[in-house]
Image (cartoon, rainbow, N blue to C red; front, side, top):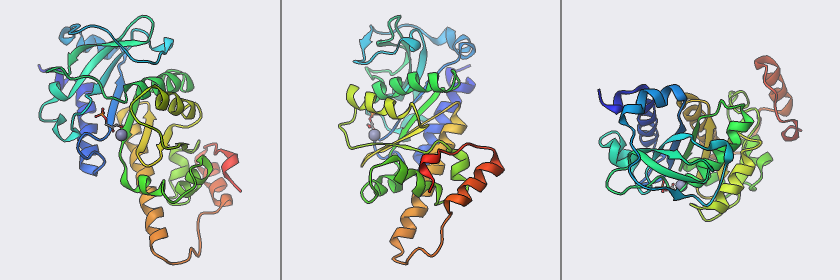
Length: 273
Ligand code: 13P
Ligand code: ZN
């Protein structure tokens, strides 16, 4: 049996493929990490071997010491993952101090984890705490409609959350906490990692101005679904703004409260009128 037939590996590759087909991963755009369960590590164990030495990340999270992550490779194209997974994705383990990784499978021919691994890592740390250990997936995609909105909406959580909640009736049910916004920053390092993880203390998703979106979730379905829902709402909002027609009606704050009651979710009141 190939390691790629193990369900968690299949799920990882499937999400990458789905994201590619959505048009969210031009060239090497976007990245995905998954924090493995102990039972999954057991099922993968015979394939895992420390291949290279420890690499310091520039960030630290004690609550992720000894964890193992599946990760996409830096500079790798989502388009190629299904065809040649071992060159484009890999499994890394974290050291005892929670500040370094080493490859234990894949990332062949000298590949390394995504350049956004520090952001993923800090987000994993924060979301692990925020969800009592349930969160396992961090997913970054270059979602075109949401990126377009970051040029015309104020870069504030309230503005983005309201625009998205009011663009599709299911949105407040899918992300009742709302979304956070990180202003434009240089990608790929410790600074943007720290800024994003601050946002992720309160929100399951963080918009990166003029760049894309980070989503978190307990499994691949939930995380992909969150990315998909937010990007679709952004698409609708952009279509409405682009129509050149005045907005005659929308989903009001009271409507949002009605949805919250009917679906038994708690909306962030600060975002309602
Ligand atoms: P990586 O190829 O290093 O994952 O970078 C892609 C990206 O989207 C950076 O934000
Ligand atoms: Zn990116």
